[in-house]
Image 1: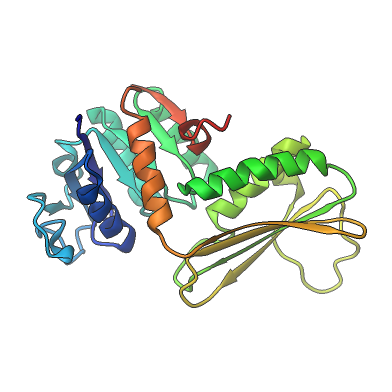
Image 2: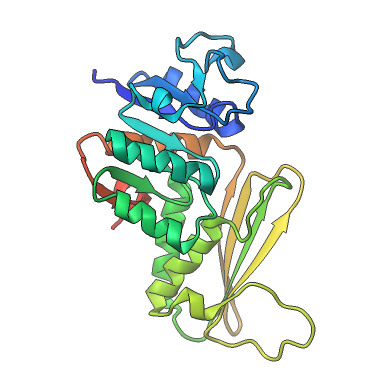
Amino acid sequence: MKQHKIAVAGASGRMGQMLIDAIRQSGDCELSGALDVAASPGIGADAAAFSGHTSGVLIHSDIRQGLKNADVLIDFTRPEGTMAHLAVCRELGVKLVIGTTGFSEAQKAEIAAAAKDIAIVFAPNMSVGVNVTLKLLEMAAKAMSTGYDIEIIEAHHRHKVDAPSGTALKMGEVIADALGRDLKECAVYAREGVTGERDPSSIGFAAIRGGDIVGDHTVLFAGTGERIEISHKSSSRANYVLGSLRAARFLENRTSGLFDMFDVLNLK
């Protein structure tokens, strides 16, 4: 069986460690590199030491050193880190799975440009369930294009630094596209004071931060005499890990192009 040679960014973090453990248990994936910031206490240690195993792969802060044996890098870090990794991946021909959120429009354009040279799966949420939910939202929006007010409510742990979540924004984009609207023009991110009546063409967002909530997302379609709620709730980060490994496998025979989880799951 062919082994997928995968490097992991943020190897000392929660997602990084879950990815490393999942790769070890996968049967068809091999940990070939591990990256973290220079200040991380894990630098120089075996990447699997946290689990009591030995991988033979050390955690590096030098990006080229961490990628030299990799076919694919999986990155769930911060935008500035991902952009640094992107530049080196493009230079070395290493494919990329990006689960990082919070990018600016300019950074998204840079990712799209890099995809002309390397294959990239870029999705704000790697969960299979979330992406099936996005497809359901597309169908619902088309069926309820008039007479329904749309609100997106998301909840995450107290440590999350961006709001709304990348997944909530993706939900808004999918719904807006299905309705022929531009999310930049119709999104409402805050309400306070005397706001006036709700604009029926708007898509509202509400963000909750607290405790150790992994990630809850609900889209409310509120009509006259009824409301429809489509929800996805994560109880563990394992769904993101399994989806990102599926994305890495998807890239095996692709040399360039920008893909998302709809491509990976054949939902288009």
